[in-house]
Amino acid sequence: MINIDGSFGEGGGQIVRSALALSMVTGQPFTIEKIRARRSKPGLMRQHLTAVQAAAEVCGAEVSGDAIGSTALTFTPGTVRGGEYAFSIGTAGSTTLVLQTVLLPLVLAPEPSHVVLEGGTHNPFAPPFEFLARAYLPLLRRMGADVRAQLLQPGFYPAGGGRIEVDIAPVAGLAAIDLLERGAAVARTAQACVANLARSIAEREIRVIRRQLAWPAEHGEIEEITGAHGPGNVVTITVEHEHVTEVFTGFGERQRAAEAVADAAARECRAYLKATAPVGEHLTDQLMLPLALAGGGSFRSTGLTPHAHTHIELIRKFLDVPIETQREATG
Image 1 (cartoon, one colour):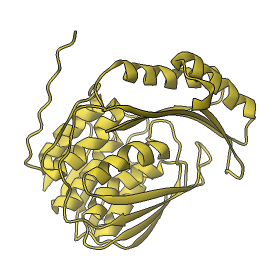
Image 2 (image 1 turned 135 degrees about the horizontal axis):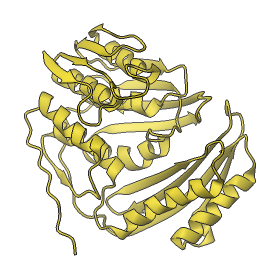
Image 3 (image 1 turned 135 degrees about the vertical axis):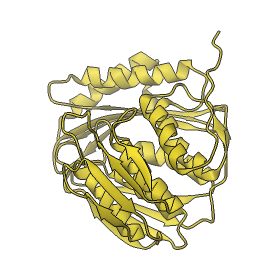
Image 4 (image 1 turned 90 degrees about the vertical axis):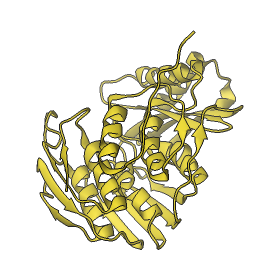
Protein backbone atom coordinates (compact mmCIF):
# COMPACT_ATOMS: atom_id res chain seq x y z
CA MET A 1 0.00 0.00 0.00
CA ILE A 2 1.42 3.36 -1.07
CA ASN A 3 0.84 6.12 1.49
CA ILE A 4 0.41 9.68 0.21
CA ASP A 5 0.22 12.96 2.08
CA GLY A 6 -2.33 14.95 0.10
CA SER A 7 -1.06 18.23 1.53
CA PHE A 8 2.51 17.86 0.29
CA GLY A 9 3.89 20.15 -2.38
CA GLU A 10 1.19 22.01 -4.27
CA GLY A 11 -1.39 20.04 -2.30
CA GLY A 12 -4.24 20.22 -4.83
CA GLY A 13 -6.58 17.87 -6.62
CA GLN A 14 -3.92 16.84 -9.13
CA ILE A 15 -2.38 14.61 -6.47
CA VAL A 16 -5.63 12.64 -6.29
CA ARG A 17 -6.12 12.43 -10.06
CA SER A 18 -2.56 11.38 -10.85
CA ALA A 19 -2.48 8.89 -7.97
CA LEU A 20 -5.62 7.29 -9.38
CA ALA A 21 -4.13 7.09 -12.88
CA LEU A 22 -0.84 5.65 -11.63
CA SER A 23 -2.63 3.16 -9.40
CA MET A 24 -4.77 1.91 -12.27
CA VAL A 25 -1.81 1.50 -14.63
CA THR A 26 0.55 -0.12 -12.13
CA GLY A 27 -2.01 -2.12 -10.13
CA GLN A 28 -0.70 -0.67 -6.86
CA PRO A 29 -3.23 0.35 -4.17
CA PHE A 30 -2.80 3.61 -2.29
CA THR A 31 -4.19 5.56 0.60
CA ILE A 32 -4.14 9.34 0.70
CA GLU A 33 -4.79 11.60 3.69
CA LYS A 34 -5.09 15.37 4.13
CA ILE A 35 -6.68 15.76 0.68
CA ARG A 36 -6.55 19.44 -0.35
CA ALA A 37 -5.90 20.24 3.32
CA ARG A 38 -4.69 23.81 2.68
CA ARG A 39 -7.58 24.79 0.42
CA SER A 40 -10.39 27.03 1.66
CA LYS A 41 -12.73 24.05 1.26
CA PRO A 42 -10.61 20.96 2.05
CA GLY A 43 -11.41 17.46 0.86
CA LEU A 44 -12.96 16.08 -2.29
CA MET A 45 -15.11 18.46 -4.31
CA ARG A 46 -17.61 17.27 -6.92
CA GLN A 47 -15.14 17.04 -9.81
CA HIS A 48 -12.60 15.17 -7.64
CA LEU A 49 -15.27 12.72 -6.52
CA THR A 50 -16.34 12.18 -10.12
CA ALA A 51 -12.72 11.39 -11.00
CA VAL A 52 -12.58 8.82 -8.18
CA GLN A 53 -15.87 7.26 -9.28
CA ALA A 54 -14.75 7.20 -12.92
CA ALA A 55 -11.48 5.48 -11.99
CA ALA A 56 -13.31 2.93 -9.84
CA GLU A 57 -15.71 2.15 -12.67
CA VAL A 58 -13.10 1.57 -15.37
CA CYS A 59 -11.06 -0.82 -13.21
CA GLY A 60 -13.58 -2.28 -10.74
CA ALA A 61 -11.71 -0.82 -7.78
CA GLU A 62 -12.48 -1.17 -4.10
CA VAL A 63 -12.76 2.34 -2.63
CA SER A 64 -13.35 3.88 0.77
CA GLY A 65 -13.64 7.59 1.55
CA ASP A 66 -15.37 8.43 -1.74
CA ALA A 67 -17.65 11.22 -0.54
CA ILE A 68 -17.91 14.99 -0.90
CA GLY A 69 -15.64 16.64 1.65
CA SER A 70 -13.69 13.48 2.42
CA THR A 71 -10.07 14.20 3.33
CA ALA A 72 -8.92 10.56 3.18
CA LEU A 73 -9.26 7.96 0.43
CA THR A 74 -8.18 4.35 -0.05
CA PHE A 75 -8.14 2.93 -3.58
CA THR A 76 -7.43 -0.69 -4.49
CA PRO A 77 -7.53 -1.09 -8.28
CA GLY A 78 -8.75 -4.03 -10.30
CA THR A 79 -8.10 -4.64 -13.99
CA VAL A 80 -8.70 -1.70 -16.35
CA ARG A 81 -11.25 -2.52 -19.04
CA GLY A 82 -12.13 -0.48 -22.10
CA GLY A 83 -15.74 0.00 -23.10
CA GLU A 84 -18.56 2.53 -23.18
CA TYR A 85 -18.40 5.02 -20.32
CA ALA A 86 -20.35 8.14 -19.38
CA PHE A 87 -19.39 10.45 -16.52
CA SER A 88 -21.42 13.48 -15.45
CA ILE A 89 -19.98 15.89 -12.92
CA GLY A 90 -23.32 17.56 -12.32
CA THR A 91 -21.70 21.01 -11.97
CA ALA A 92 -19.31 23.17 -13.99
CA GLY A 93 -16.44 21.02 -12.68
CA SER A 94 -13.84 20.29 -15.31
CA THR A 95 -14.51 17.44 -17.75
CA THR A 96 -10.90 17.62 -18.96
CA LEU A 97 -9.56 16.96 -15.46
CA VAL A 98 -11.85 13.95 -15.02
CA LEU A 99 -10.70 12.70 -18.43
CA GLN A 100 -7.09 13.25 -17.34
CA THR A 101 -7.66 10.65 -14.61
CA VAL A 102 -8.84 7.78 -16.83
CA LEU A 103 -7.30 8.62 -20.20
CA LEU A 104 -3.89 6.94 -19.96
CA PRO A 105 -5.20 3.82 -18.20
CA LEU A 106 -7.77 3.42 -20.99
CA VAL A 107 -5.10 4.04 -23.65
CA LEU A 108 -3.20 1.06 -22.21
CA ALA A 109 -6.31 -1.13 -21.76
CA PRO A 110 -6.77 -4.15 -24.04
CA GLU A 111 -10.09 -2.92 -25.49
CA PRO A 112 -11.18 0.31 -27.21
CA SER A 113 -13.20 2.87 -25.29
CA HIS A 114 -15.79 5.53 -25.97
CA VAL A 115 -16.08 8.08 -23.16
CA VAL A 116 -18.72 10.78 -22.74
CA LEU A 117 -18.13 13.49 -20.14
CA GLU A 118 -20.60 16.18 -19.07
CA GLY A 119 -19.86 19.27 -17.00
CA GLY A 120 -17.54 22.22 -17.53
CA THR A 121 -15.36 22.40 -20.63
CA HIS A 122 -14.02 25.94 -20.13
CA ASN A 123 -13.20 26.61 -16.49
CA PRO A 124 -10.64 28.85 -14.81
CA PHE A 125 -7.81 26.80 -13.24
CA ALA A 126 -8.35 23.81 -15.54
CA PRO A 127 -7.16 23.03 -19.07
CA PRO A 128 -9.88 24.00 -21.56
CA PHE A 129 -10.96 21.65 -24.33
CA GLU A 130 -8.79 23.46 -26.90
CA PHE A 131 -5.67 22.77 -24.85
CA LEU A 132 -6.57 19.10 -24.71
CA ALA A 133 -7.32 18.82 -28.43
CA ARG A 134 -4.59 21.05 -29.88
CA ALA A 135 -1.65 20.78 -27.48
CA TYR A 136 -1.85 17.57 -25.43
CA LEU A 137 -3.50 14.91 -27.62
CA PRO A 138 -1.22 15.51 -30.65
CA LEU A 139 1.78 14.74 -28.45
CA LEU A 140 0.10 11.61 -27.10
CA ARG A 141 -0.50 10.51 -30.68
CA ARG A 142 3.21 10.99 -31.40
CA MET A 143 3.83 8.60 -28.51
CA GLY A 144 1.63 5.99 -30.13
CA ALA A 145 -1.74 6.67 -28.52
CA ASP A 146 -4.82 6.80 -30.74
CA VAL A 147 -7.18 9.27 -29.06
CA ARG A 148 -9.76 11.54 -30.71
CA ALA A 149 -11.87 14.10 -28.86
CA GLN A 150 -14.90 16.13 -29.90
CA LEU A 151 -16.49 19.14 -28.21
CA LEU A 152 -20.24 18.67 -28.66
CA GLN A 153 -21.40 21.42 -26.32
CA PRO A 154 -19.30 23.99 -24.45
CA GLY A 155 -19.91 24.37 -20.74
CA PHE A 156 -18.81 27.58 -19.05
CA TYR A 157 -18.41 28.33 -15.35
CA PRO A 158 -20.65 28.45 -13.35
CA ALA A 159 -23.53 26.94 -15.39
CA GLY A 160 -21.68 23.94 -16.86
CA GLY A 161 -23.76 21.84 -19.22
CA GLY A 162 -20.87 21.01 -21.55
CA ARG A 163 -20.32 17.70 -23.29
CA ILE A 164 -17.26 16.08 -24.83
CA GLU A 165 -16.82 12.66 -26.41
CA VAL A 166 -13.53 10.79 -26.61
CA ASP A 167 -12.64 7.69 -28.63
CA ILE A 168 -9.63 5.67 -27.48
CA ALA A 169 -8.04 2.81 -29.42
CA PRO A 170 -5.87 0.42 -27.37
CA VAL A 171 -2.08 0.33 -27.71
CA ALA A 172 0.44 -2.05 -26.21
CA GLY A 173 2.52 0.77 -24.77
CA LEU A 174 3.64 4.35 -25.18
CA ALA A 175 6.83 5.33 -27.00
CA ALA A 176 9.26 7.85 -25.56
CA ILE A 177 9.74 11.14 -27.40
CA ASP A 178 12.32 13.90 -27.23
CA LEU A 179 10.90 17.38 -27.56
CA LEU A 180 13.84 19.73 -27.47
CA GLU A 181 13.04 22.25 -30.21
CA ARG A 182 9.87 23.92 -31.46
CA GLY A 183 10.73 23.68 -35.12
CA ALA A 184 9.49 26.12 -37.74
CA ALA A 185 6.45 28.30 -37.07
CA VAL A 186 3.37 26.89 -38.80
CA ALA A 187 0.28 28.85 -37.74
CA ARG A 188 -1.05 31.29 -35.15
CA THR A 189 -4.63 32.12 -34.26
CA ALA A 190 -6.45 34.19 -31.67
CA GLN A 191 -10.08 33.32 -31.03
CA ALA A 192 -12.54 35.13 -28.80
CA CYS A 193 -15.69 33.19 -28.00
CA VAL A 194 -18.87 34.56 -26.44
CA ALA A 195 -21.92 32.57 -25.36
CA ASN A 196 -25.11 34.48 -24.65
CA LEU A 197 -23.09 37.70 -24.46
CA ALA A 198 -22.57 40.69 -26.73
CA ARG A 199 -20.31 40.24 -29.76
CA SER A 200 -18.63 43.52 -28.87
CA ILE A 201 -16.89 41.78 -25.93
CA ALA A 202 -15.10 39.44 -28.34
CA GLU A 203 -14.30 42.30 -30.71
CA ARG A 204 -12.59 44.23 -27.90
CA GLU A 205 -10.59 41.16 -26.90
CA ILE A 206 -9.36 40.51 -30.43
CA ARG A 207 -8.27 44.14 -30.76
CA VAL A 208 -6.17 43.85 -27.60
CA ILE A 209 -4.52 40.61 -28.71
CA ARG A 210 -3.72 41.96 -32.17
CA ARG A 211 -2.17 45.05 -30.63
CA GLN A 212 -0.19 43.16 -27.97
CA LEU A 213 1.17 40.53 -30.36
CA ALA A 214 1.35 42.72 -33.48
CA TRP A 215 -0.72 40.20 -35.45
CA PRO A 216 -2.64 41.12 -38.61
CA ALA A 217 -6.43 40.90 -38.80
CA GLU A 218 -6.52 37.49 -40.48
CA HIS A 219 -5.16 35.86 -37.31
CA GLY A 220 -8.19 36.93 -35.25
CA GLU A 221 -11.49 35.02 -35.08
CA ILE A 222 -14.77 35.58 -33.27
CA GLU A 223 -17.17 32.77 -32.37
CA GLU A 224 -20.70 33.38 -31.10
CA ILE A 225 -22.31 30.40 -29.37
CA THR A 226 -26.03 30.03 -28.93
CA GLY A 227 -27.74 27.36 -26.86
CA ALA A 228 -25.19 27.30 -24.03
CA HIS A 229 -26.57 26.73 -20.53
CA GLY A 230 -25.27 30.06 -19.34
CA PRO A 231 -23.19 33.05 -20.37
CA GLY A 232 -19.53 32.52 -21.06
CA ASN A 233 -16.46 34.12 -22.58
CA VAL A 234 -13.10 32.58 -23.36
CA VAL A 235 -10.08 33.84 -25.28
CA THR A 236 -7.85 31.19 -26.87
CA ILE A 237 -4.47 31.93 -28.47
CA THR A 238 -2.98 29.01 -30.39
CA VAL A 239 0.64 28.99 -31.57
CA GLU A 240 1.56 26.03 -33.75
CA HIS A 241 5.15 25.03 -34.51
CA GLU A 242 6.51 22.06 -36.39
CA HIS A 243 6.98 19.92 -33.27
CA VAL A 244 4.59 21.40 -30.72
CA THR A 245 1.43 23.48 -30.38
CA GLU A 246 0.83 25.69 -27.35
CA VAL A 247 -2.48 27.18 -26.23
CA PHE A 248 -2.97 30.22 -23.99
CA THR A 249 -6.33 31.04 -22.46
CA GLY A 250 -8.17 33.85 -20.73
CA PHE A 251 -11.61 33.50 -19.13
CA GLY A 252 -14.20 36.22 -18.85
CA GLU A 253 -15.58 36.90 -15.40
CA ARG A 254 -18.07 39.25 -13.82
CA GLN A 255 -16.54 42.63 -13.01
CA ARG A 256 -13.52 41.93 -15.23
CA ALA A 257 -13.03 43.99 -18.37
CA ALA A 258 -12.71 42.24 -21.71
CA GLU A 259 -9.42 44.05 -22.22
CA ALA A 260 -7.99 42.54 -19.02
CA VAL A 261 -9.02 39.02 -20.08
CA ALA A 262 -7.31 39.37 -23.45
CA ASP A 263 -4.26 41.14 -22.05
CA ALA A 264 -3.49 38.31 -19.62
CA ALA A 265 -3.63 35.66 -22.36
CA ALA A 266 -1.56 37.81 -24.73
CA ARG A 267 1.14 38.43 -22.11
CA GLU A 268 1.43 34.70 -21.43
CA CYS A 269 1.72 34.01 -25.17
CA ARG A 270 4.28 36.79 -25.65
CA ALA A 271 6.46 35.40 -22.85
CA TYR A 272 6.38 31.97 -24.48
CA LEU A 273 7.31 33.37 -27.89
CA LYS A 274 10.28 35.22 -26.37
CA ALA A 275 11.59 31.98 -24.85
CA THR A 276 13.11 29.14 -26.87
CA ALA A 277 11.87 26.05 -25.02
CA PRO A 278 9.10 24.19 -26.87
CA VAL A 279 6.98 23.21 -23.86
CA GLY A 280 5.12 25.76 -21.74
CA GLU A 281 4.52 25.43 -18.01
CA HIS A 282 1.03 23.91 -18.23
CA LEU A 283 1.93 21.39 -20.91
CA THR A 284 4.94 20.43 -18.78
CA ASP A 285 2.59 19.18 -16.06
CA GLN A 286 0.65 17.10 -18.59
CA LEU A 287 3.66 15.52 -20.30
CA MET A 288 5.32 14.10 -17.20
CA LEU A 289 2.94 11.20 -16.64
CA PRO A 290 2.89 9.77 -20.21
CA LEU A 291 6.68 10.05 -20.48
CA ALA A 292 7.08 8.27 -17.15
CA LEU A 293 4.76 5.50 -18.34
CA ALA A 294 6.75 5.30 -21.57
CA GLY A 295 9.87 4.78 -19.48
CA GLY A 296 11.86 7.59 -21.04
CA GLY A 297 11.97 10.74 -23.14
CA SER A 298 12.96 14.33 -22.62
CA PHE A 299 11.75 17.85 -23.22
CA ARG A 300 12.74 21.43 -22.66
CA SER A 301 10.32 23.58 -20.69
CA THR A 302 9.87 27.29 -20.09
CA GLY A 303 9.66 26.51 -16.37
CA LEU A 304 8.47 24.18 -13.61
CA THR A 305 5.41 25.12 -11.59
CA PRO A 306 4.71 23.89 -8.05
CA HIS A 307 2.29 21.46 -9.74
CA ALA A 308 5.17 20.01 -11.74
CA HIS A 309 7.46 19.54 -8.73
CA THR A 310 4.63 17.83 -6.84
CA HIS A 311 3.91 15.63 -9.84
CA ILE A 312 7.51 14.44 -9.99
CA GLU A 313 7.47 13.35 -6.36
CA LEU A 314 4.15 11.53 -6.80
CA ILE A 315 5.31 9.65 -9.90
CA ARG A 316 8.36 8.44 -8.00
CA LYS A 317 6.10 6.76 -5.45
CA PHE A 318 4.57 4.49 -8.13
CA LEU A 319 7.23 4.10 -10.82
CA ASP A 320 10.90 3.23 -10.66
CA VAL A 321 11.92 5.63 -13.41
CA PRO A 322 14.63 8.30 -13.10
CA ILE A 323 13.31 11.85 -13.43
CA GLU A 324 15.95 14.52 -13.71
CA THR A 325 15.56 18.27 -14.04
CA GLN A 326 18.29 20.67 -15.04
CA ARG A 327 18.19 24.45 -15.23
CA GLU A 328 19.59 25.79 -18.49
CA ALA A 329 22.11 28.57 -18.44
CA THR A 330 20.71 31.88 -19.66
CA GLY A 331 22.35 34.52 -21.81
